[in-house]
Image (tube, rainbow, N blue to C red; front, side, top):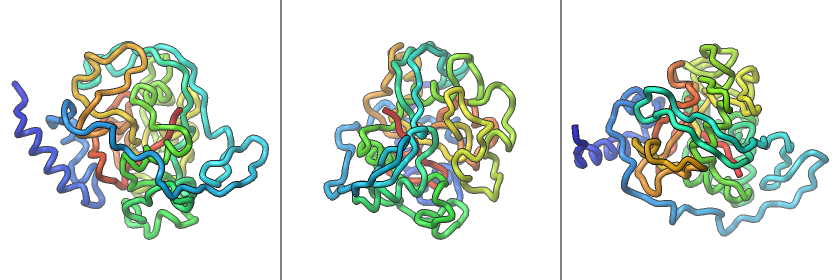
Length: 304
């Protein structure tokens, strides 16, 4: 059946109005409903006006030890960046609706080992280089969450897409493309999950409202690492990636380093969250969220 433009617009307006709701995946729209909806992705915004670095950005000068580098005046181990070799892999899944199986070849890239944490994002905010989260609490009501030392190494949440991109750009990085994210999550052997083919357990991933129904410390589920050592690529928080969402993009995307659609309304998120059921943790599962909104279930990591 042909998709009707007014229905698409209605869905977007409803999602935008609901986006401020708490204790929900994607602003009171359930993930299952999203997967079944007529999702926009062929018209709308562009990347032309995405801010890169705030004009007041003045990171302090710090002296880091051997094997460390400075990020906004905060010393980070070099091992927090993972080198992913170039190669080809089968992206998507056989029989998938908006994820049809197709072969993709990528150049080598670097990706963060973990999701960006509260303490690392706080360093960027303190340096005047980043916009604070839209809410300093968390999904389940931890208050405060951002800025509280107890949650320093937990993933930052309530960060809009452009603010996540802003953080990455200030480090000479960017959000990973959807193809890079999936390659880092599953490698070249066609695995279903970052750790392999075995179904998710609470040892491998943080999902299904475990641990009090909120975020966990990054890398807590070390047994669930991807082939390249990336942590929490299934569960904990959904992660913004660079791409606009396009329902049919996989059928026409370039075979080499696909950048995602040129325009769109919704941005892709990957990986599932602590609130997701097991069947949303597949390494190929893709969802969409409105980039101008922020969510207690969404974080990000950077790449270059």
